[in-house]
Image 1 (cartoon, each protein chain N blue to C red):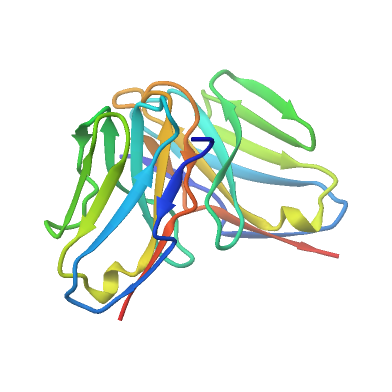
Image 2 (image 1 turned 135 degrees about the vertical axis):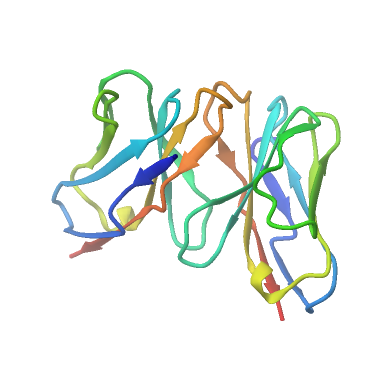
Length: 110
Length: 114
Protein backbone atom coordinates (compact mmCIF):
# COMPACT_ATOMS: atom_id res chain seq x y z
CA UNK A 1 0.00 0.00 0.00
CA UNK A 2 0.89 3.66 -0.11
CA UNK A 3 1.93 5.27 3.15
CA UNK A 4 3.66 8.45 4.25
CA UNK A 5 4.55 8.92 7.93
CA UNK A 6 5.51 12.12 9.68
CA UNK A 7 5.31 13.18 13.33
CA UNK A 8 2.06 14.95 14.14
CA UNK A 9 3.58 17.83 16.07
CA UNK A 10 6.98 19.17 17.09
CA UNK A 11 8.09 22.04 19.30
CA UNK A 12 11.35 23.98 18.97
CA UNK A 13 12.91 27.18 20.24
CA UNK A 14 13.53 30.35 18.25
CA UNK A 15 17.08 30.39 16.91
CA UNK A 16 17.52 26.63 17.21
CA UNK A 17 17.58 23.85 14.60
CA UNK A 18 14.82 21.30 14.01
CA UNK A 19 14.65 18.18 11.84
CA UNK A 20 11.30 16.91 10.58
CA UNK A 21 11.40 13.30 9.40
CA UNK A 22 9.30 11.62 6.74
CA UNK A 23 9.26 7.93 5.91
CA UNK A 24 7.42 6.52 2.93
CA UNK A 25 6.29 3.23 1.46
CA UNK A 26 4.98 3.66 -2.06
CA UNK A 27 4.64 1.40 -5.07
CA UNK A 28 6.68 3.79 -7.19
CA UNK A 29 8.89 6.82 -6.67
CA UNK A 30 9.51 9.87 -8.83
CA UNK A 31 10.54 12.50 -6.32
CA UNK A 32 9.75 13.81 -2.86
CA UNK A 33 8.38 17.25 -2.08
CA UNK A 34 8.21 19.35 1.07
CA UNK A 35 5.56 22.05 1.40
CA UNK A 36 4.94 24.62 4.12
CA UNK A 37 1.40 25.52 5.14
CA UNK A 38 0.64 28.37 7.52
CA UNK A 39 -2.66 28.17 9.37
CA UNK A 40 -5.52 29.24 7.14
CA UNK A 41 -3.34 29.44 4.04
CA UNK A 42 -2.56 27.21 1.07
CA UNK A 43 0.59 25.05 0.97
CA UNK A 44 3.67 26.61 -0.60
CA UNK A 45 6.54 24.70 -2.19
CA UNK A 46 9.77 24.38 -0.19
CA UNK A 47 11.93 21.69 -1.77
CA UNK A 48 12.16 18.76 -4.15
CA UNK A 49 14.48 15.74 -3.98
CA UNK A 50 14.69 13.02 -6.61
CA UNK A 51 18.29 11.85 -6.06
CA UNK A 52 19.88 10.77 -2.78
CA UNK A 53 21.57 13.47 -0.80
CA UNK A 54 21.10 16.91 0.66
CA UNK A 55 19.54 19.89 -1.10
CA UNK A 56 20.24 23.19 0.64
CA UNK A 57 18.24 26.37 0.16
CA UNK A 58 19.04 29.09 2.64
CA UNK A 59 17.91 28.17 6.14
CA UNK A 60 16.10 25.09 4.83
CA UNK A 61 17.68 21.81 3.69
CA UNK A 62 16.07 18.58 2.60
CA UNK A 63 17.64 15.13 2.56
CA UNK A 64 16.62 11.96 0.74
CA UNK A 65 17.61 8.30 1.01
CA UNK A 66 15.66 6.29 -1.55
CA UNK A 67 16.98 2.94 -0.30
CA UNK A 68 15.65 3.69 3.19
CA UNK A 69 12.45 5.39 2.05
CA UNK A 70 13.39 8.34 4.23
CA UNK A 71 13.60 12.09 4.00
CA UNK A 72 14.05 14.93 6.42
CA UNK A 73 13.55 18.67 6.33
CA UNK A 74 16.10 20.63 8.35
CA UNK A 75 15.28 24.15 9.46
CA UNK A 76 18.09 26.28 10.89
CA UNK A 77 18.05 29.56 12.82
CA UNK A 78 14.37 29.12 13.54
CA UNK A 79 12.16 32.18 13.41
CA UNK A 80 8.69 32.64 14.83
CA UNK A 81 7.31 32.84 11.28
CA UNK A 82 8.45 29.23 10.73
CA UNK A 83 5.53 28.10 12.89
CA UNK A 84 3.48 26.17 10.36
CA UNK A 85 2.62 22.68 9.18
CA UNK A 86 5.19 20.93 7.00
CA UNK A 87 3.84 18.46 4.46
CA UNK A 88 5.83 15.64 2.90
CA UNK A 89 4.61 14.26 -0.45
CA UNK A 90 5.91 11.53 -2.75
CA UNK A 91 5.23 11.41 -6.48
CA UNK A 92 4.30 7.95 -7.70
CA UNK A 93 5.99 7.16 -11.01
CA UNK A 94 3.11 4.95 -12.17
CA UNK A 95 0.58 7.76 -12.40
CA UNK A 96 2.57 10.81 -11.31
CA UNK A 97 0.14 11.46 -8.50
CA UNK A 98 1.35 13.02 -5.28
CA UNK A 99 0.80 10.98 -2.14
CA UNK A 100 0.61 13.29 0.85
CA UNK A 101 1.55 12.84 4.47
CA UNK A 102 -0.76 14.28 7.12
CA UNK A 103 1.75 17.03 7.92
CA UNK A 104 3.84 17.98 10.93
CA UNK A 105 2.71 20.98 12.95
CA UNK A 106 5.81 22.89 14.07
CA UNK A 107 5.44 25.18 17.07
CA UNK A 108 8.22 27.71 17.68
CA UNK A 109 8.61 29.11 21.19
CA UNK A 110 10.55 32.25 22.11
CA UNK B 1 -2.08 34.70 -14.57
CA UNK B 2 0.71 35.00 -12.07
CA UNK B 3 -0.75 32.47 -9.70
CA UNK B 4 -3.61 30.05 -9.21
CA UNK B 5 -6.83 31.82 -8.31
CA UNK B 6 -9.99 30.38 -6.81
CA UNK B 7 -13.44 31.76 -6.28
CA UNK B 8 -15.31 32.32 -4.12
CA UNK B 9 -12.87 32.58 -1.23
CA UNK B 10 -15.66 31.77 1.21
CA UNK B 11 -19.02 30.13 0.66
CA UNK B 12 -21.72 29.55 3.24
CA UNK B 13 -24.64 27.46 2.07
CA UNK B 14 -27.57 25.56 3.47
CA UNK B 15 -27.69 21.80 3.56
CA UNK B 16 -29.19 20.43 0.36
CA UNK B 17 -28.13 23.31 -1.89
CA UNK B 18 -25.74 22.94 -4.82
CA UNK B 19 -22.44 24.84 -4.93
CA UNK B 20 -19.95 25.51 -7.68
CA UNK B 21 -16.30 26.27 -6.98
CA UNK B 22 -13.99 27.73 -9.59
CA UNK B 23 -10.26 27.43 -10.22
CA UNK B 24 -8.13 29.42 -12.66
CA UNK B 25 -4.74 27.70 -13.02
CA UNK B 26 -1.48 29.30 -14.05
CA UNK B 27 -1.43 29.86 -17.80
CA UNK B 28 0.39 27.00 -19.52
CA UNK B 29 -0.08 24.54 -16.68
CA UNK B 30 -1.62 21.44 -18.19
CA UNK B 31 -2.15 19.49 -14.97
CA UNK B 32 -4.80 20.55 -12.47
CA UNK B 33 -5.68 18.99 -9.12
CA UNK B 34 -8.51 19.42 -6.64
CA UNK B 35 -7.96 18.60 -2.96
CA UNK B 36 -10.15 18.84 0.12
CA UNK B 37 -8.76 19.75 3.52
CA UNK B 38 -10.87 19.47 6.64
CA UNK B 39 -9.89 21.51 9.68
CA UNK B 40 -6.66 20.20 11.17
CA UNK B 41 -6.43 17.38 8.65
CA UNK B 42 -4.17 16.54 5.72
CA UNK B 43 -4.88 16.95 2.02
CA UNK B 44 -7.49 14.63 0.55
CA UNK B 45 -7.15 14.06 -3.21
CA UNK B 46 -10.36 14.54 -5.18
CA UNK B 47 -9.60 14.64 -8.91
CA UNK B 48 -6.81 15.28 -11.40
CA UNK B 49 -7.02 16.74 -14.91
CA UNK B 50 -4.42 16.47 -17.63
CA UNK B 51 -5.59 19.00 -20.19
CA UNK B 52 -9.37 18.74 -20.15
CA UNK B 53 -9.52 15.01 -19.54
CA UNK B 54 -9.71 13.52 -16.10
CA UNK B 55 -7.61 10.36 -15.96
CA UNK B 56 -8.10 10.03 -12.24
CA UNK B 57 -11.45 10.63 -10.56
CA UNK B 58 -10.79 8.11 -7.84
CA UNK B 59 -10.87 10.61 -5.01
CA UNK B 60 -14.37 11.96 -5.57
CA UNK B 61 -16.18 10.95 -2.37
CA UNK B 62 -19.62 10.41 -3.87
CA UNK B 63 -21.70 10.95 -7.00
CA UNK B 64 -22.72 14.33 -5.57
CA UNK B 65 -19.27 15.57 -6.56
CA UNK B 66 -18.34 16.33 -10.16
CA UNK B 67 -15.73 18.43 -11.90
CA UNK B 68 -14.99 19.65 -15.36
CA UNK B 69 -12.28 21.61 -17.07
CA UNK B 70 -12.46 23.78 -20.16
CA UNK B 71 -9.47 23.20 -22.41
CA UNK B 72 -6.34 23.68 -20.35
CA UNK B 73 -7.91 26.49 -18.39
CA UNK B 74 -10.67 27.00 -15.87
CA UNK B 75 -11.99 24.13 -13.80
CA UNK B 76 -15.18 23.96 -11.78
CA UNK B 77 -15.95 21.60 -8.93
CA UNK B 78 -19.65 21.11 -8.30
CA UNK B 79 -21.14 19.65 -5.15
CA UNK B 80 -24.81 18.79 -5.36
CA UNK B 81 -27.16 18.48 -2.39
CA UNK B 82 -24.47 19.62 0.03
CA UNK B 83 -24.15 17.94 3.41
CA UNK B 84 -22.58 19.28 6.60
CA UNK B 85 -19.72 16.80 6.17
CA UNK B 86 -18.78 18.65 2.96
CA UNK B 87 -17.61 21.62 5.04
CA UNK B 88 -13.91 22.04 4.35
CA UNK B 89 -11.38 24.08 2.42
CA UNK B 90 -11.25 23.08 -1.24
CA UNK B 91 -7.81 23.64 -2.72
CA UNK B 92 -6.91 23.72 -6.39
CA UNK B 93 -3.34 23.27 -7.63
CA UNK B 94 -1.74 23.28 -11.05
CA UNK B 95 1.59 22.18 -12.49
CA UNK B 96 3.37 22.35 -15.83
CA UNK B 97 2.70 18.69 -16.42
CA UNK B 98 1.86 15.60 -14.48
CA UNK B 99 5.38 14.27 -14.70
CA UNK B 100 7.31 17.37 -13.89
CA UNK B 101 7.24 20.54 -11.97
CA UNK B 102 6.01 21.47 -8.57
CA UNK B 103 2.37 21.98 -7.69
CA UNK B 104 1.32 25.58 -7.16
CA UNK B 105 -1.73 25.93 -4.94
CA UNK B 106 -4.50 28.47 -5.05
CA UNK B 107 -5.72 30.17 -1.85
CA UNK B 108 -8.64 27.78 -1.50
CA UNK B 109 -12.39 28.10 -1.06
CA UNK B 110 -13.67 27.71 2.47
CA UNK B 111 -17.05 25.97 2.27
CA UNK B 112 -19.39 25.95 5.24
CA UNK B 113 -22.60 23.94 5.05
CA UNK B 114 -25.13 24.88 7.71
